[in-house]
Length: 168
Image 1: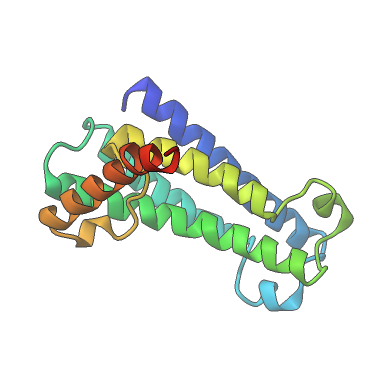
Image 2: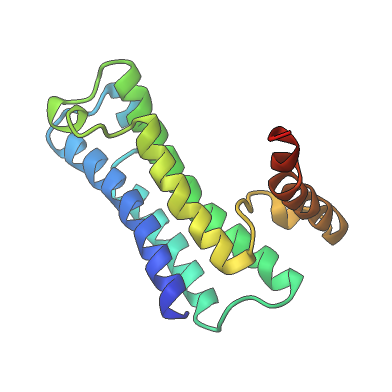
C-alpha cells in the first residue's frame, strides 16, 4: 500500500475507531442505553469484527492498487464491509443523541452529529478517489462496466457543463 493511500485510510479509520472507543467507554461505565447494549455495540467482539475487516483490506492492498475490474470489485466489497461497522457506530451515536441518551462527556464534543458524519464522508471520499477515481463506490461492484462509465460521464457532465448554464 502506498503512503498516500495509507494516510487517507488512517484518517478515515481514526474517526471510526473513535466512535467505537466512545461506545466501549459508555458500555464500561454503564452509560449505554439498553436498546444499544442488547445489540452488542461497543463490545470487544464488535471491535474484533471491525479489525478483521480492516485486516482484509490491508492484506488486499499490500499487493498494490487493484488493476482489473474484478480486483476493484473485491476491494470495494472489503472496504464497504469495514465501513459498515463504522456507519453502524455513528448511527448508534446519532440515535442516542436524538433520543437525548448520550452522556454529557460525549454530547459536548458534538459526537453523532451530521457535521461530524460529513467530515467522515470527506475522508471516505478521499480514499475512494485515490483508489478508484470516484467519489462513491458502495454497490459499485455490482454494476457492470457500461453502467459505471455512464454514471461517471453523468457526474463529469454535471460538474463541468451544468455550472456553465447557471451563470447565464
